[in-house]
Image 1 (spheres, helix red, strand yellow):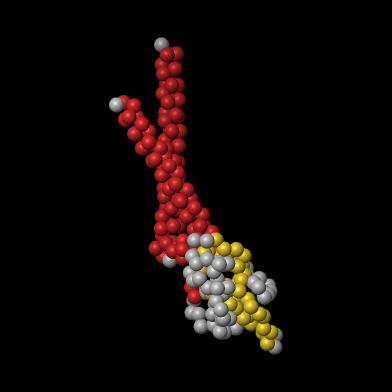
Image 2: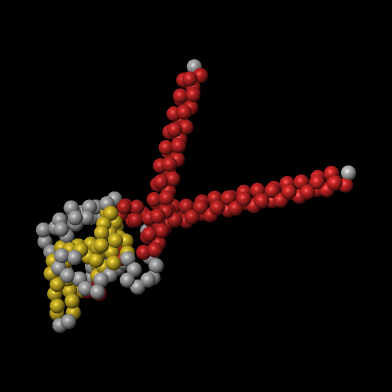
Amino acid sequence: MAAKKSDKSGRKLNAKAIWLVLANAIFVFLILVGLIIAASLLPIKNNFKIYAVMSGSMESTISTGSAVIVKPQLMYQKGDVITFLPINAKSKKESITHRIESVIDENGLIYFRTKGDANENVDEQPIPSDRVIGKVLFSIAIIGYVVGYIKTLPGLVLIIIIPATIIIYEEVKKLKSEAKKIIEKRKAKGEGKKSLRKIKTK
């Protein structure tokens, strides 16, 4: 009976340890994603940007739910996959990621004809160069769902603010614990010196 109980308790401990490792790994991963997104939002010239691709127009090059890392370039050419704002777009949430099919030069003004790899037809409106956010450097599957959520207020609170608060709280606890140990050591040394003095006076 004792052996069975120890086996069960051992399994429970192992399962708990595995869950803790997984939870910590997910926690660290989410923090890293949050920090990368926060870095992409910094107002730095030619800074990289992260966008979520939530349609299948670029399948199978870029799958639905992928995150694309985008960086502005001095020049764009045919074949480049770019993220841009359509002419009628009101915010960057309406950005589109498609491939350049052709480059049009009209009296020094550059336009791009774009098309999704999975689409049969070229996009209706040519895109002026000033509407291009940047060239897609690479994409990461599935992460787009996380990116899309983090960019919302609840996602920002859940992924960045709450973990940051927990980390700060844990660090403060550690500092308090270390300070307590130092104080206790000093007290012990002080009491030791007092006892030595008493012995000497005797």
